[in-house]
Every structure is written in structure tokens, then in C-alpha cells.
Image (cartoon, rainbow, N blue to C red; front, side, top):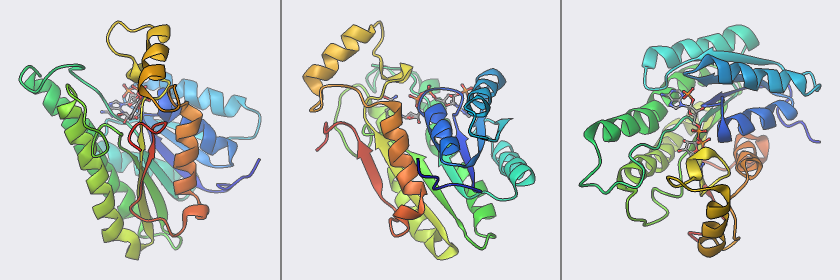
Length: 257
Ligand SMILES: NC(=O)c1ccc[n+]([C@@H]2O[C@H](COP(=O)([O-])OP(=O)(O)OC[C@H]3O[C@@H](n4cnc5c(N)ncnc54)[C@H](OP(=O)(O)O)[C@@H]3O)[C@@H](O)[C@H]2O)c1
């Protein structure tokens, strides 16, 4: 096991479940101190318990924060630095999918606003809080935003609002990367395709239904695992990717190849 993040502090939003939890655990296994954030306390505490229970001396801190609120994000970064001394890596993973399967004409306006508030404004505000800290550090920092293959990468019906937000994440990532590489802050994105979390089920779908859909739709014939998405994130956050700036790494089993 390599330990690319020993002595570094990694912040992961949306780390109480799914992909975010998998990313947090992967950082801990590679030696990072991990700060896990989300709105609900209990799932964050579970992630901390999983990290601390792995027996590799992992240290983690749970902080409740709503990424659509700038003050929460500033407090989150402050809590990370107060506890562990720096913020070396941030993964902006928190995201929501509302109004699943709706056309543009039928989507409730509140679902539109909720998605943009979390998926776009949430990333923008997180970038601001994280960059404000990282640009003061001698070693800068690395940020990975979680976009989606449903965004700039694919053309699918009944996903327009979610796709518009995730496309904004891909574009915002490139712009932030260009703006802040001179500050020593590297910004990249990962765009997952369907991944083995609750979000990838269509309404009423069972695991067997999803598996059958993936066999038909995906070149690799299955959903990606959370570990596969986490591996892409850790690569981009690591020194292995020191010259990778503004990339948007698609992990979708070839669906948009
Ligand atoms: N699963 C997939 O197939 C797939 C594919 C492409 C992209 N993605 C993206 O990957 C990311 C993770 O998705 P997932 O599948 O792991 O879904 P998930 O299990 O629903 O995780 C989303 C996490 O975000 C947190 N969150 C939601 N709104 C928040 C807010 N306002 N402030 C802070 N945290 C918030 C949630 O915790 P709380 O409710 O406690 O806040 C939850 O832990 C999302 O950005 C998603 O769009 C997923």
C-alpha cells in the first residue's frame, strides 16, 4: 500500500454516503487526516468510525456543513485547519439529483433551484473557501470537483437540469484551474458514470434491473465501483498528477468514449 497523503489533510464534502464516503476512506488508507462534511451528523460520524476502526491510525473529523451556504464552507475550512494544521486536498463531491426522469417542461422550479444551489453554487463557494486557505500555504493544494458524465459528456433525455449543473461544474473546474495554478492550487474534476450508489438507480429499479440495464448500455457492462471513482480522485489529488491541471477525468465504463 502506498501512502501518497501521509501528513496531509483532505476534506471531502458529501462524505456521509456513497462516493464521498468511499473517497474519504481511500484518503485515510493512504495516510491522510480526513475532514468529512455533509448536512447530517449521523452518517458523518459513521464515516469517522469506519476510518478510525480500520486500524491504520486514521484520524478524521466530522463537520456538519451545507455547501450552499458560504459561511458553512468558511467554517468547515477553518475547522480543518484548526484541527490538522493545513488543507492540502479538497474534494467537492456533495451533489443532489432532484426531479429524476422529468422533462424540462415538467421539472418543478424548486428542483431546478435545489440542484443549482448544491451542485453549482455549492462547488463555487467551496472553491472560494478552499482556495482562500490553500493560496496562503507554501505547498498550495489540490482540489477535485465531482462532475458527472451527465453534463458535458453525454446527451441523454430527461436529465437536462442535472446535466446543466454538472456541465457547469466541468467548465468551472477548467476556469478555476487556469485562474489559480499560479497560486499553487491545482483544480481538476472527475466525471463518474453510473456508480454503485443509490443515486444510480432509476425510480423503482432493483439491483438486478440496474445490472441488466448496465449490461445493455455500458461498454464494460456494469456500474463503476465507488473504489474505481475514488482511485481517479486520489490520482488527481496526488503528486503523481502534479502537471495535470484543469482535467475532467471520465470514469464511465466507456459509455461516452
Ligand atoms: N452515483 C452515481 O451514479 C453518480 C454518477 C455521476 C456523478 N455522481 C455525483 O457524485 C456525487 C456523489 O454522489 P453519490 O452517488 O455518492 O450520492 P449520495 O450517496 O446521495 O451522496 C451525496 C452526498 O452529498 C451530501 N449532500 C447533499 N446535499 C448537500 C449539501 N447541500 N451540503 C452538504 N452535503 C450535501 C449528502 O449528505 P447530506 O444529505 O447529509 O447532506 C450525501 O452524503 C454527487 O455529486 C453526484 O452528483 C454520482
